[in-house]
Length: 386
Image (cartoon, rainbow, N blue to C red; front, side):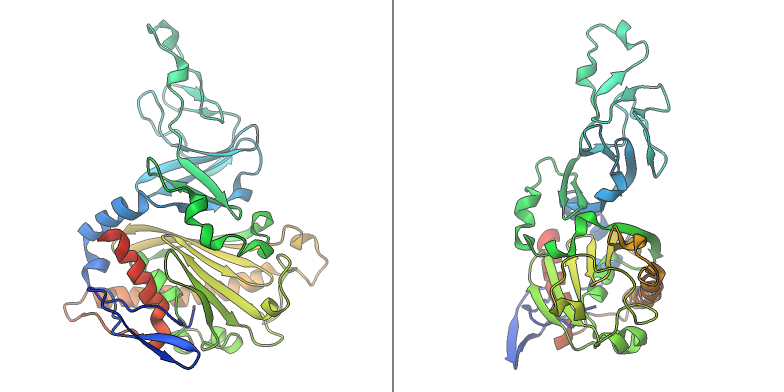
């Protein structure tokens, strides 16, 4: 939830008019996206092809596959992908498709197994994807197991988060994420552990989730509990264009973003002194919302299912040693309950927006000076679908 500070405006024609006032930059002329971007099945197909089949998408955290044999299955666009830790503790990704007759290999959402075996004809693969066994295939002339390894998916790690790309030759993730180099190191993200995951099924377009997350213009009315501990007009943004957008908001002195208003765990890392009174919000195009608090990190992963439906996996990550600390230091539910309440408030207004946008009465409306980050996000989105 950010008070957006500066970004060239967006209209369907992208004609900017930028004004400067005091310490912030805001825009005039920026308007919300036309209706078709939220309701059209054709636009949704276009997004799947031009965004979700080409970009780096976050599917989870390295702690989910920390031991050899650990795996989970991720839905990436219209594909099913197996994320697995091999015998050398290297994290790999494979299409969830047997090389024999195309059968889905893994049905379970997660687990641990020494091999990957097809449930149909028992073709068996190593954790590195190599075909190890294929019953009766030694009777087939010129059959060579080396030619039938699982098809790999491009996979890279960034700050402990697992990203995959379905593109044949994606731009290197290190190059794409260069603007974030070192930015989040002191939050110790690779070493954190999830205390809870909640999956939300939201009857709204995925873009509305991003736009809502990127401003706090709505916070006084929609989030009264949040507004009490984090002033809605306190934001400072440091990423204001491109794939990565966001900044921080203040936390009231002596408060924390929890039900009790108190800190609920050990600091997640070497947090700078000033940052103990701040919460950082960043969106990573096209499927990550990253919220960094002094004592926990919240990550939302979005998966669009249709023009009007989005699944959101929300994880709360804490210091790996937090649960070992003596009471009353560790109370993860204090943060989880606070944000579960806040998330549901957000999803409700996003669903109301979806209903209204579907009306014949809808037309693009003007963004306020506090919504230039949503306008920036819209502009970046249009770069990838037009």
